[in-house]
Amino acid sequence: MDYTIKEIAERADVSIATVSRALNNDKRVKASTKALVVSIAREFNYRPNILARNFVRRKSNIIGLIMPDIVDEFFTEVIKGVESVAHSGGYFTLVASTHSREGSLLETLAAFTHRRMVDGLILLTTNLSPAIKKGLSESGIPVVVIGENPELKETDVIAIDNYQGAYSLVSHLINKKGYTKIAHIAGPPENSDAVQRKQGYLQAHQDHGLTVNPHWIVDGAFTIPSGEAAFRRLMSLIQKPEAIFAANDMMAIGCYEGADSFGLSIPEDVAVAGFDDIFVSRFLSPRLMTVGVPIAEVGKTAATLLLDRMNSESHIASRLVTISTGMVLGQSS
Image (tube, rainbow, N blue to C red):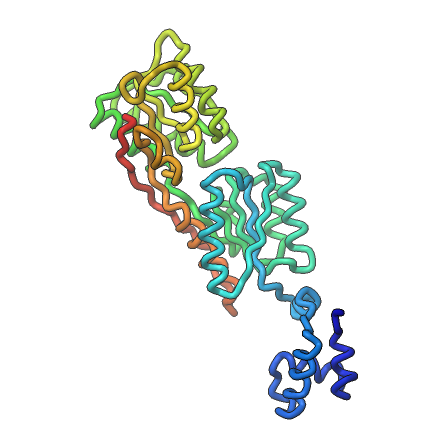
């Protein structure tokens, strides 16, 4: 049987307000009364209605984390980073996936901010529409965005240095490995991370005096199947590339699948490189050459900024933190 605070008050012969104060260790309650109330609560195995209590306090001790998906290892590493910081700060993390749909994102945003279900919000997105920006601005809660900069007042942004990472990797393929025919499997064209990585790829070619064959740039979807489909398309061309730079490791894994179906060897027949350095890429044979991103650190940094903003008694100006990348020199090129 679930007992209520009213029944504890009746048993102790005190008011409901006194019971509430006693259970919250209020100094206004006499020690003897507090001891009596606590004793009865234990006897009843009383569990407070946390949602109701937090509604009154306008504090939930929950932070919301909205992501486009949660099936990719990149997203799970971000979640781990966020949760580790949130838990140490006394907060739970409520994770929601929008399946990369704007309507779903807006619905989730409205649900999270209605009656302050969450005390703060971390949003991972690379495509912020005017409607989403409006929703964030009107939410009334602290917000940290991982990805595209919404340029909203008092909103922090975590950005990965996508351009430099891609530029450095492609430059390495050209300078150190001697490749001049490098294809690119890009991410979705509406994804700002994908756009920046493609820009780095193109600029590296331009700076090294190389012309990019337009047929060697194929759009993918940041998934293994899309990477395999793009690989098949590239390897079916009359003029085949010597190397392929996939805009993320998942699509690079798809290239391994495609190479196996074509009976091709990596890197002897075609070199492959990726971006992110997700955990599973370390077990590919040969080891994938990729751009290393401290993914869990992205989540930790976002949560740290959010808790700082939530617990601050004064206004904090918008902050931009850029996460540097590194190069992982695998044997796939």
